Amino acid sequence: MALVSVFEAVLALICFLFLCCLRNKNRSPKSFPIVGMLPELILNIHRIHDWCTETFERCHYTFLFNGPWFAKINIVGTCDPTNVHYIMSSNFNNFPKGPEFKQLFDVLGDGIFNTDMDLWRKQRMVAQEFMRNQSFHKFLLRTTRDKGLVVNLEDVFQRFTFDTTCILVTGYDPKCLSLEFPEVPFSKALDDVEEAIFYRHVRPQSFIKLQRWLKMGQEQKYRKAWEVLDDIMTKYICQKRKELDTTTKGLVSQNGEDGVDLLTSYIAEEKPTGLKCDDKFLRDTILNMMLAGTDTTSSALTWFIWLVSRHPIVENKIIEELQSKLPAEETKKRRLFNAEEVKDLVYLHGALCEALRLYPPVPFQHKEPLKPDILPSGHPVHPTMKILFSLYAMGRIKSFWGEDCLEFKPERWINERGRIKHEPSYKFMSFNAGPRTCLGKDVAFLQMKAVASAIIYNYRTHVSEETPVVLAVSIILHTKNGLMARISTRWD
Image (cartoon, rainbow, N blue to C red; front, side):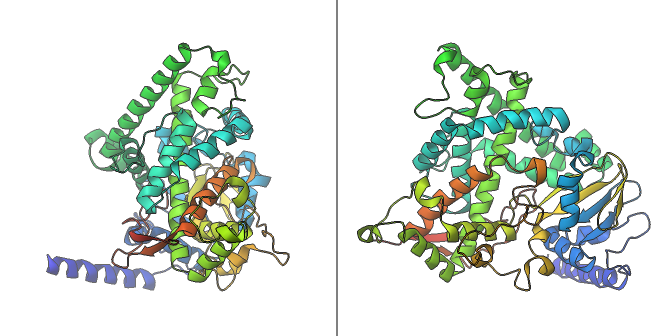
């Protein structure tokens, strides 16, 4: 076994040196006959995001990836803010997500992340109205407070955000964040789906179809995960319909004292939305919202706590800022902070933005042009191409963020007047840009501030040196091995 490992390492080194010698004059990956640029992609798949960043820097932020001739994989990759602004804002209508996106993410059905044009606009309008309602914010604050008493690392963050999102979306508490740490089939199924979708981006359609036909590999795992998700969501929808049938729908008021969940709102409230709220629509909506609210927030919190644990000066500044909101006699006692106390904290907000810049929860996304166009960078695109944005690379380019772009510096987000410095969304794209800007941005910041303040103020986090913190291969920026740490109380 050791001999095989050595042979594989030597072979990988030879391939690396060979590819370096054959690199194109424009510094893009070498394109070989028949297989295109696939060899270099395979060689770097375990470090795909860092490889993309290095390639973008060599190629002036945009390059054409040529896949195998038989696979029809032609992708324009970019992290150029001018291209992003053009695609996401100024020429938005020519760059929908497109049919291939829907095919890759078919488990999401006709939910808001998978749709374009009128159907997307109608869903966004309904979701926006729900999230702006005061009853939703009451429900969010109560849910976050009830679930946020004790917090602990990546697995717990995932359990916490899964519980809170499930309550907000369906009204049911799966109680994943309990002392027993029970197995969570829904969460495990989401992880399997996300991993399979990542590999769909880099594999030929013919290979995907073969795996599906043979019922093996990632596609078989994907199919089983889909069944788990459908079973659980069907159960939630049936339960909610029964509950509402036994009560008067008029009693379900959005002005209730504790607020209502999204599923109740969609079923009980008769609104002229133009959307048919049948079980399929509800299923697609639940899954899209669960994906948006669970893994993205838990990923952001994981990388934030890891970064803060490695920067004690930042940690102390956050504690000092929190203490500034308290009476002197309460500054060294364990406590939780409410929304009013944390919403205007400048340094904490800057630290969260800095973590999101370096480790965006969704590290890439793609679009498809409806008709031929030329990007501001001069690269032509046409409907048979995909355009891929690397959000991970966008946060790590020196010409965008300075020579210290790889450093964790919350001060980067604070202006001379001591206020939050605004960065355009096409440069800092963690919450998307243009008409598709994330509806849950304010909700996410509120939840992250509540959790982050509770952990940092009340506990010391000592990250284990024995378990390396590295990126997982997924469409969500998880860690590969979890964030293993020892937690101790800060105040007696």
